[in-house]
Image 1 (cartoon, rainbow, N blue to C red):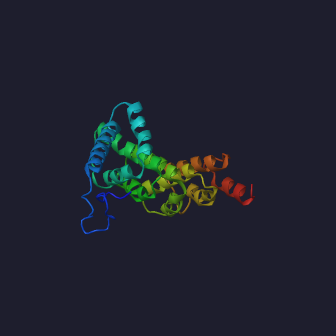
Image 2: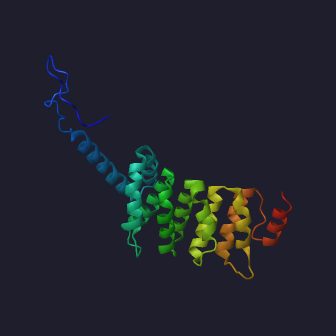
Image 3: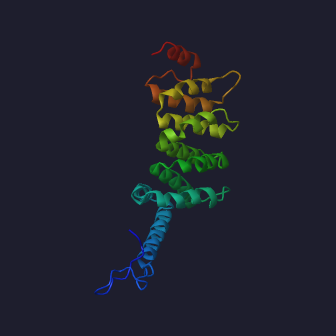
Length: 223
C-alpha cells in the first residue's frame, strides 16, 4: 500500500483537478517501527552476552521471529564489530550466540563471515564449533564452500569444514571426508581426523573410527 494518500475530491469534483495533489506521507508509523526494531536488536545483543545459557538460547530462538531484517545487523556484527584478540566471557558469548542466531536464520550471506570468524580465532575451538553448527543449519547453501575448505591450508578451516559437513547432512560429503583420515602424505593431524571420523559416522551410521582403509573399503563396496 502506498504511503501517499490523495485528498478526497469535493462534491461535484472528479478528483482529477490540479487541486488533487498527493499529501505528504505519514512516516510516524515507520519511525516508530524502526525504533522498536532497534530496541529489540539491542536487547538481543545484550542477551547474547548473558552468563545464563537459557537467556542466550532464548535470544537465539527469538531471532527467527524477527526474520531477514535482523540478519543484516547480525552479519554486520559478526563481520565488523569483533576484536579478534583477547576476549572476556561476555564477548565470547556474544560471538558464539551471533553465529548460532545466523544459523537459525539460514541466511546464505552469513557463510563467509562465519568462515572468517573461525579463521581469525583459529585457536578457540568453541568458536569453530559454533561456526560449524551455524553452517550446518544454513544447510545445502554452505555445502560446496565446506567441501572447498577441506583443501584449505588452514587446519582450523579444515576442522570447521569436517564438522559442518556432518551437520549439513549431505551423504555426498562422505567421499570428501574419507581422505581427511590420512596419516600419510597428505598428512592430517589427529584433531582433523577425529572431526572427519565423527562426521562420517553421523552421515553413514557406520563406525570405523579413523581407519581410512576400512572406510574406503566400505565406500567402494557401495554399502
